[in-house]
Image (tube, rainbow, N blue to C red):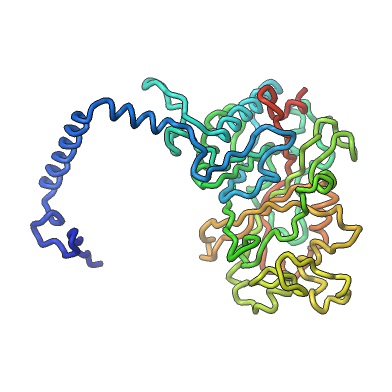
Length: 434
């Protein structure tokens, strides 16, 4: 490998004996002279400039994205919140020794998430103590659209904390479906799930690091998957790693009637305990996409498998992404095949209206597998009122669809997203543990 001589400021290479070829002792002397000069100038400017710099750095602000998502409310943020650019899904085993320890864990989680999502100056730390913050985001925490959604798994309701009788009615371990590849997976289930989303990747990582620091005695991470939310290209719904728009036909949860029917759980309904009011069932699935094989398939076949045009996202019988497919006018599947993914997932009949799910997935990229193939895909995440009536019913219809030759679900779990924290004196799980 040849090394090129670095250019001088005017674009010409430095000749031997110039700064680019200086002896080590000369380079050290130049560095030390610069450091001394910097110190002298700094001293001449005086303490007033330093005080001004500190004051500017300490000013609280809205963060790089300018978004601050409210933390308090009847439902948790991060469910109906418009999707942020980055996410981490982290499953934990709860190791709190007893019920009092679990309460303390949930109170600590509440305090940390409330502070992190609000943003603001980092509390000062004396030099003899460990810093109160990692400083990876600087001395002022940006809110940066941060949300942390807390869910609990079925295993939390075993005998450890006396919660068996209070388990949400539909909360069970995620089963293996016919086309899954879960054998030997280490990324399954968990006592507690954190869905951490923000407008910047480093904000997500900072939040996870902060939470882990403050909860070391209460929970231990089991598995983690990171995701990114692609920008719309060129417009409309973002695309997944298969190149198709993903999430087009989500239910209109801005309509409160729709949200109450398909998204939020209601205490006392369908055998649910009273404390679940305002929560939602969360499904997380790690779906690897076998893109090396997919990229060899004709565009016609790809579109027939999905049921949409790849360029516009329009259904095969429409012209725009927002056009609803008219299956009633195509009973034999001449335009949209009967086995198309969108037709199986949502047949759009009166009987399947209450089976809709709110999808909130993220793309992922995890390098290469042992054979040198790309490990990319979708962190599928959805929320619903009843996981058996909604997600599982949809999944059963999708069993054996043509797309299964190009995707491989490898992990995930079912969780129950707790009701929201209603105010400064409330905490996660307060009704559950009352």
